[in-house]
Amino acid sequence: MLRDIQRELHDGGMRGCVLVRDLHTGEELGIEPDTQLPSASLVKVPLALATAERIRRGELDGATVLDVQPGRITTPGPTGLSRFRHPARIAIDDLLYLSTCVSDGTAADALFELTPPTQVTDILQEFGLRGFTIRHGMRELSDTPAERFDAAQAHLAHALAIDAGTSGRGHRVPQLDTTRASTGSARAYVELLQALWTPSKIPAEVAARVRDLMAHNLLRHRLAPDFSSDATTWSSKTGTLLNLRHEIGVVEHSDGQAFAIAVLTESIVPASTQPGADALMSQAARRLRDHLRQL
Image 1 (cartoon, helix red, strand yellow):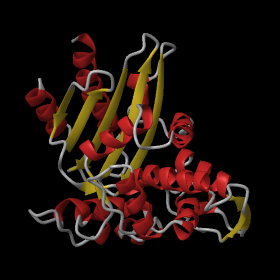
Image 2 (cartoon, helix red, strand yellow):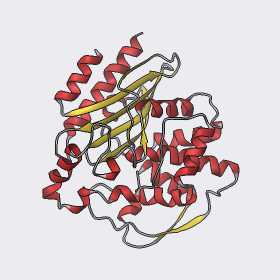
Image 3 (cartoon, rainbow, N blue to C red):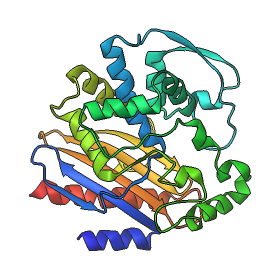
Image 4 (cartoon, one colour):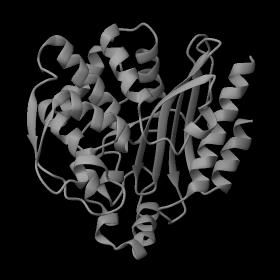
């Protein structure tokens, strides 16, 4: 089955790193789950965790209002403050919502100014979470070849992303170079999800807050179609950068079963819009979930 799924992903123009874990039994199935890939916007989940923990400790006050400069980004993709044209005054609690639920990069950068990448990493390690490298904020992700071509030439940026890498996962595009970008593996993200959904070193109130943010994620075009129903709850976060398409999440069934899912992919097709790739990611994850659910 794993070979079949891996072949289907490849035939669909993707290299995939996938891990699905039953949160109650610990049983899991995966494809290259330990491969490190650039995290893109998935890093906003560790950022949310670190911010919520600092609020719990009293180091930050969620009601504190910050003056945030507009992102003024006009290329397709960015959301929220990243597209604002004028300054805004927003509370930390609301920046946390925008960063996690709307995947607003400018809101995330405002939070990174309060809790820098090294401190986010330190908090993860305090909770026993390894396998992450957080090196920069989100501003770097809006300065890629994609922003230097117009929409009709987007394929050129994707061709560069696909072809300019090295066998050691270095890359001419720094945001795709695993020695310079923020990175994580499917396993690292599943470990994070398990720590948020089951008893762990993360304080219960902090875990509950991050779960609630992920439950209200508005970007639901990848895995959600195969995991959303009246009998399930799907909580998730997506990540997108050039040819990278990621999603992590937890599906909770009404019968009490729950599964953590991480799908991290690299497209080998030079196109920015690939709904078929999103569907294939979802189908692969669902097949693994269905197999574990039947055990």
